[in-house]
Every structure is written in C-alpha cells, then in structure tokens.
Amino acid sequence: DIQMTQSPSSLSASIGDRVTITCRASENIYKYLSWYQQKPGEAPKLLIYAASTLQTGVPSRFSGSGSGTDFTLTITSLQPEDFATYSCQQSYFAPITFGGGTRVESK
Amino acid sequence: EVQLVESGGGLVQPGGSLRLSCAASGFTFNNYAMKWVRQAPGKGLEWVSSITSRGTHKYYADSMKGRFTISRDNAKNSLYLEMSSLSAEDTAFYYCARDAGGTNSLDFCDYWGLGTRVTVSS
Image 1 (cartoon, each protein chain N blue to C red):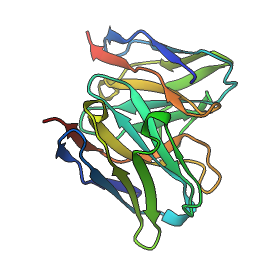
Image 2 (image 1 turned 90 degrees about the horizontal axis):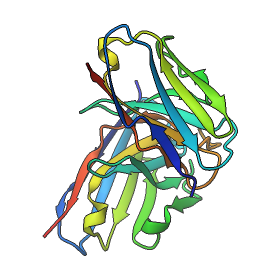
Image 3 (image 1 turned 180 degrees about the vertical axis):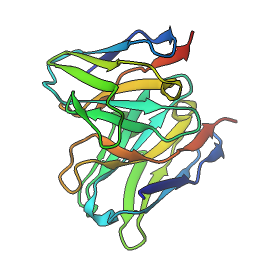
C-alpha cells in the first residue's frame, strides 16, 4: 500500500499566521491528492482535491500544491475556525490511503 | 443539503458482529458510489470498503475481507456495513462517505457523516 507521511504531526500557531503542512507519498501519485479538515464532533470536510483544486465553498485562504510525491497544504492567514486536524489522501493507487493527520493548535 | 447519518455502533464483544447503517438524504443516492472509512483512537483515517452506485461492485481493505460486507438499498437511500469476527483492532469511529465522482468513482469523498463509534471489548 502507498504510505502517506504528513509533517508535522502537530503544530502551534496564532491567528493570522501562515501555516504549511506537508504530505509525502511513498510512490508517484501524480496529482491524485486530497486534503480534509476534521474538527471534534464534526464530519470530515473535503478542502482540496486534485492536489490544488479548492472544493466549492472552501475559503480562498486554503491552497494546495505539489505533484508526484510531495504536496503542501497552506493556510495563508489562520482563522479561529481553522484549528483542526488536517489529513491528506491519495487516490491513485488502490487501496486509497490517508496520512496520519496534522493537528493545528492554538499557540 | 447533503446529509449522511450513521447508526448501529456500540459495544460488542470480541468475535461478535455488528451492522452499521448510513441514511443518506439531500442528493440522488443511486447516482453515487459510497464508502466506509474508519478512524481508530489516536490514529489516522483508514479506508474500509467501497460500493458502486448500483451495488454491482464491492471492494474491501485486505484486513476486512471475509469479515465485512458492504451493501446498499437504493430504494431506502441507505448504505450498510455488516461486520463479523470483530476484534479490538476494529475499535474505531466508522464514517459513511460519498464518493465525489458520482457513478464514476474518483476515490475521494466530498461528504461525510458524523460517524458511529464501534468498541470491541469484553
């Protein structure tokens, strides 16, 4: 199975900070990469698919980049509602696999 | 509004069985492939199983093959997961999720439910 490695596993940030989360695939997955946001007690939410396409309704402060094996999720100006756990997922190889998650906490 | 509501979770003894349900609303259910994804305590998300829009094709993670059965009833807008021979390793939140590709699976999910908790313990 394809291993998806996220870093860091957690980070502390302040409102207004630029936050960058990295996801690395163990093999080339081209641009078959999605990002999800999870908050306690809420359903996971799709943020980005195809590595860089913003899902409808997602604020433009979220962006994704990368292809091949290295991908990045960026939040340009962290907002209070962005404290959550973020996970990447590859959909090029079966079975689909997820990263371990990155928890974004308040500094 | 798309809604996915899971039910059926609970405490079950090792070796036991459980049937999870997912009630879908707000979209044309039979136009979408569906998935079950789980998350063990403190762990990342893990794909469990997928089913095509008409239920013709079913797919399972290796560790679930032979123990879990996915099904759907398009007349009832419902997705199911029958789980048997459960062990502590199956303890997790189980999420129902809609494949973003509709009938042509894209293998990522645009809507998820809140999940239902399954605890396997004696």
